Amino acid sequence: MMDAYQKLTEDHAWVSPIYGELSDFVHLSFRHCWPVMAGTDDENQIADFAISAQDPKKVESNYYEVTDAFFRVTKLTGMMLAALLMDRHSPSPARGSEA
Image 1 (spheres, rainbow, N blue to C red):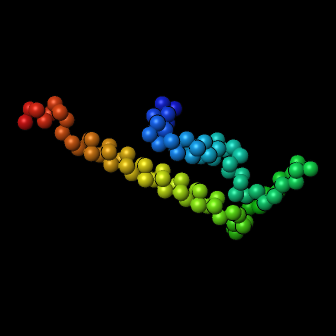
Image 2 (cartoon, helix red, strand yellow; image 1 turned 180 degrees about the vertical axis):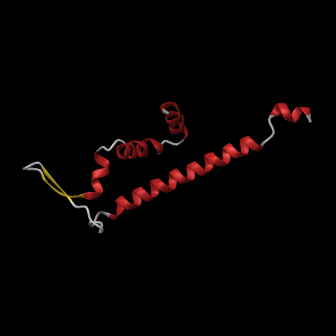
Image 3 (cartoon, helix red, strand yellow; image 1 turned 90 degrees about the vertical axis):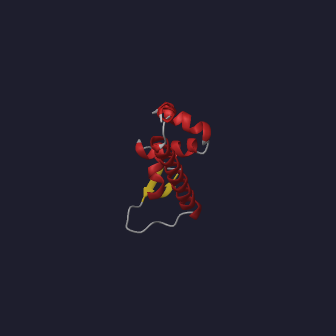
């Protein structure tokens, strides 16, 4: 898995920071806590969380960042699938010379 990730980042540098952010969700690290964190008290080292049917008001740029990342990953996946299908359905040089 790591080899494929490193190869992908050679041509698409933007994958690296997104991969780091999304890995936090998979490994249940701190990133998944951001949307439900309602506030912090640094002096007492307390964090308040709010889980409800309503999203607490957040900076809109956070939503744009996630949406942009989703769009870029979806576009790259589509391009890679198209390349795979084109390669799979094109005649190989060995078969082409026999015809």
